[in-house]
Amino acid sequence: MALAAPQKIESYLGKLRARLRGLGNEEINDIIEELRSHILEKSTVNGELGTGHVEAALAGLGTPEDLASEYMTDAALARAEVSRSPVQILPTLFRWASLSVAGFFVLISSLVGYLLGAALILCAVLKAIHPQSAGLWSFHDSSGDLNLSLRLGFGSAPSHGHDVFGWWIMPVGLVAGLGLVMLTTRFAIWCLRLYRKSRRHSEPKPFVRTGAR
Amino acid sequence: MNVSHEQENSDKWEVQLRKGCLELATLAALWDGRLYGLEILRRLESDSDLVISEGTVYPLLSRLKSLGLLESEWVESDGGHPRKYYYLTSAGKRRAQEMFGIWSRFSSSMGRLLRPLTKGK
Image 1 (cartoon, chains in turn red, blue):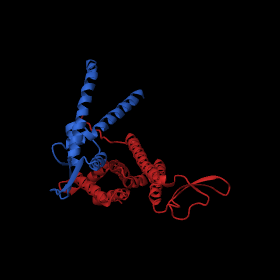
Image 2 (cartoon, one colour):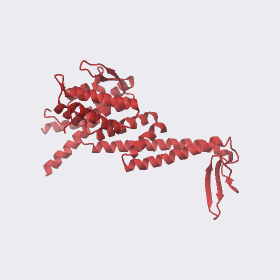
Image 3 (cartoon, each protein chain N blue to C red):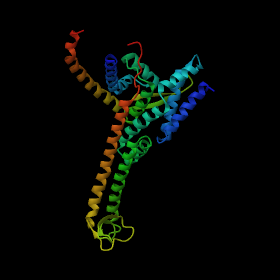
């Protein structure tokens, strides 16, 4: 059974809202209300909502999937570029990972970069609290192989281990950790820009042709 | 076959060219004062021959707002539904002026280069 005009609008906006998950609630509501206003204005003729006009207005916006993808990449990338903060970038990467394999690999690489960076910074800070066990330790395991272990100081130091940096872990850990976080952020933004560029090139119809030129 | 391939390439080039102008055109449309989404679309269509799909312009407005180039406000309308009006921030005005300068220099130098082609018409 064909849906009535108001139901078509709500069904479209409902699908779009579901796909915008990951943006803030206030931002999602703003987008939905703006598009509702646009659809109503384009579809109302002499105070009446016409089904044909609603269909044309929805077709002009594209599918909810494509439109949501535009919003997600555009707005999220802009926010990430402005703030350059991992707190802004990681939710964008999680969303991208749910959309493509490339996004998944960028997310995994970025997570590794951020976690290692955070571990180095933490190790540097915790060396002051746990000087006997925090640090980068080298030791030989039971088979005689050399191992490296970054310890935050919770638990004991490896037996017969060597504290590679000693107190130097404090400046070295801070510089290396902060540097790694910054490099990971630059890498993530660079990958997001590439993704947006590739989407733009494969975009179906950003412009609508008219007869009158 | 070749004719349709040439036409397709020409269409792609035109789309890329228009895409490149979209951000400047949107900022320029708002230079004289605030407009809402549909007004921006109509303004671009009537003043610049840039007929953009609605699915392109709304995410673009959202991005320009995230970049701090635009601000928005909701205003009640006679039609019974509120409209979201956009206006340029001071950063948006600076960006528009900067892009206009680049556009003018590029357009003038390309004009010199392309002048001989007018003789072939």
